[in-house]
Length: 231
Image (cartoon, rainbow, N blue to C red; front, side, top):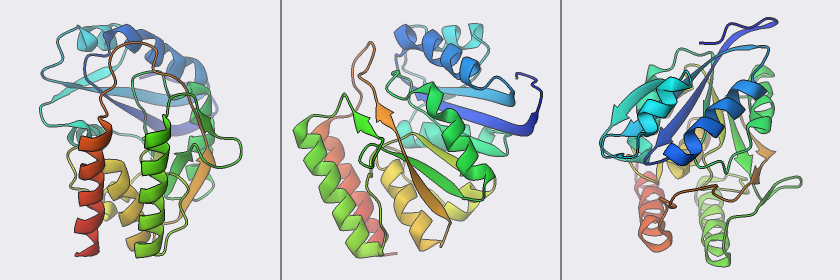
């Protein structure tokens, strides 16, 4: 944990990983550079089947490492539950999330929001790494969630987010895979939480293979939406 001056709330940055060794050092060092002046911890939750040394690199660069054997949602939940911070941030490990945006996510919680979600589709946001088919799918899911739950989202399947301590218990999250972001969006509205979207620019994956599969995980996300209509 980095001890800092001037910012006394602890920030926990949670990063689920699976074979991200080529990106790990740069991700962690980017977080450190942009959280100077804060007290923070970095938690990497590495898949047990990750075989490229991701965990070792993360430890070497000062992260606390946990292991998970289920999926992205399960890993994220494990990390968030283990976090000690007053402000919790979820972040991807492929260098698509800009560490320089961390302060914006943290500030949103500090001024009173319960959940802050990065959006690629509001003014100031964008993506270098989303093909037209995924843009269409994302917009369709946004429209469906907004219609079914009375929300006003612009982005749905993006994992750069921040949370106030204690919000996790209110959300009661259950998704273990790529439906986790959609479940957060839906339950934040259903629980009456104070939510804001902020602009975020998604960069291209730096190295390694993408973990999201458009059609397979699209069905997962649709299933998440339909399950939450019924409960």
